[in-house]
Amino acid sequence: MERVYFDHNATTPVDDKVLEAMLPYLREQFGNASSRHEFGTVARRAVDRARQQVGALVNAQPSQVIFVSGGTEANNLFIKGAAGYLRPSQVAVSAIEHPCIAKPAQELARQGWKVRKLAVTRDGQMELADVDAAVREPTGIVSVMLVNNETGVVLDVAAVAARARAAKACMHTDAVQALGKIAVDFPSLGVHAMTISAHKIYGPKGAAALVMDKRLQLRPIIHGGGHEQGLRSGTENVAAIVGFGAACELAGGRMQRLAQQLEAIRARLERGLREMGAVIFGEAAPRVANTSYFAFKGIVGETLVIELDKAGYAVAPGAACSSANPEPSATLLAMGVDPELAHGAVRFSLGAGNSMEQVDAFLRTLKTVVTRLRSLTAMAV
Image (cartoon, rainbow, N blue to C red; front, side, top):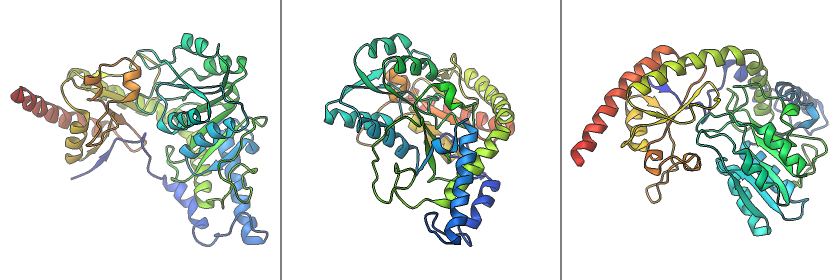
């Protein structure tokens, strides 16, 4: 059975050209980038070139790119690092943030911070009136993602950043799901810091960056040898960083063409979904081209994901499920979606290797699975 991958928002396969760029730094060019001899110098040059490649994709200077191990670390570095230089006040994050923003923000409550969740509309966009209300109170930190990882909705970060700056708050965006899908211009967003990651753009896991305004002060959360301008100590993962740079260079060259290709494939998918009676979340808002988030009334999303996996299709559930504590998507609840319908959410995310033929076959399988699940539900009633 051929297995088809429709979960590119979770991670992407490493591009062949990225792997080719990485291999020398896993073999013969194995030096530590902090060493003073030739082996170290070669590694340092590779890291410096990657820093230029990453900065170029987001219109930032290489010196603004701080390499870290992943998006989670970058988000923690901003939230905790900014708090380290501020008096406790209010930290405001959107109600649909990834846990690696929401949980560090909650940790600040232990230090006397007030945590404020910023509301979103039913389409999953920022409720700017609520942002205005939030920053009327003394606010030290604001973080709003650029693209939601579940719905694919593009948020108006620049509008939020303008309000945060006017309130003298430090503004951050998690742009992990935006990079390589839409143009990301760091200066135009108006933020003080931005998180990006390699493994969402056909690069390796283990490499990400916090892109920073040079005037922003952050207290390190990892101390040691003072790597990455003193903000992230630890021996650089040279091969992964090189892969990140190569992936950014590739993304810049194919982003527009790939978006057009994936948008056409998604349009076919969503026509089929509507014909089957699916509810598509966030479809009225601007979205990245590769993402569709949907549910069928009366069908649990986790069940649908398992059945599709048995049939050879990898998609993602929309709920944070465990046997002890199954919960519907916090993103959908923040959007005002009925909890029962939210339990049915499934995320479908396309990538460069997907095709119309794969989606057509997926829709045929989905129809069969949904029909069977509906019949079982009807029998149980």
